[in-house]
Amino acid sequence: MTKHTAFAADDAITAAAVTSQPGRRFTSYPPPTRARGGCRVAAAAAAARQATDPGAVVVAVGSLPELVPRHADLDFENWMEKHPSALAEFESVLAAAKGKQIVMFLDYDGTLSPIVKDPDSAVMSEEMRDAVRGVAEHFPTAIVSGRCRDKVFNFVKLAELYYAGSHGMDIKGPTAQSKHTKAKAEAVLCQPASAFLPVIDEVYRTLTARTAPIPGATVENNKFCLSVHFRCVHEEKWRALEEQVRSVLKEYPDLRLTKGRKVLEIRPSIEWDKGNALQFLLESLGFADSNNVFPIYIGDDRTDEDAFKVLRSMGQGIGILVSKIPKETSASYSLREPSEVKEFLRKLVRSKQRD
Ligand SMILES: [Mg+2]
Image 1 (cartoon, protein in one colour):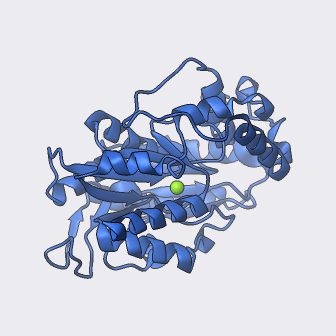
Image 2 (cartoon, rainbow, N blue to C red; image 1 turned 60 degrees about the horizontal axis):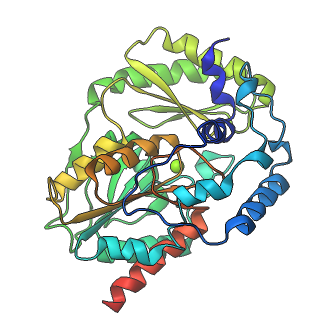
């Protein structure tokens, strides 16, 4: 087995990457300051992690045992210094955004909704919907998801938002008029991978058949990309599942495989990701090369890193990673879970109402 067995434990691997680079520091904007709580936060996080995930200390990960972390060793405090809580540092975020137009970008799974075993059950709470609705009243707001656009719209159900589905390969503007748009966007704004639709359909059918003997494996058709979920697959079968997926993809060199949180993602090999979607939407909103825009991107997955990197290269706005454990990330700030995302969005609305 080759290095690609690394898909087995996403959180574990990213956490290990952090500990392997203890001296690494990012130059984020605005510069993050020391997180509040210090050792107490670190100890509480470690205790919570071990309580909720008793298998976390010893995890068998295919052929890469060197990547298995001991969570007790993770330097959560050090990580929080580099990626402080966006709630604790809320006033710093506001100060950096002062005088600029905030544009909000939100991932869906693991950001607005909790990660659940059945991807079709990843519903969003009414409280979260209210928070997103409130933000969209004040700022242009987009949902950027790996899901197909229709599916994520059916979860969010807010017509005043932009939606970028299939990892940004299917973008459409608001279907309801809002003060951020001159008119309803009846047409799709961008579909850079439309030529791949027949291939994606074909691979979906093949993968569905080939993974059927593996209990718990599900293949989700996200129109311009596919997701093979293995959250419900017994760990002993993870390797066999990945081998099946790779053997199918050998016939399709124009498709590529990436890994998320207990999911294998299959996408067209085009230079287009969530970072491109963020740039496209900023341009669509009239902020190309603008110094007066402050994009805020909140996401929890590896695919969100492309957007965090774009923000860093722009030197504008902030990326916020949703995570309870240290992960290598280009985000400047962190939030622990969707409930903190909801609180952050509410605070943003309250701050706008104060103005
Ligand atoms: Mg996500």
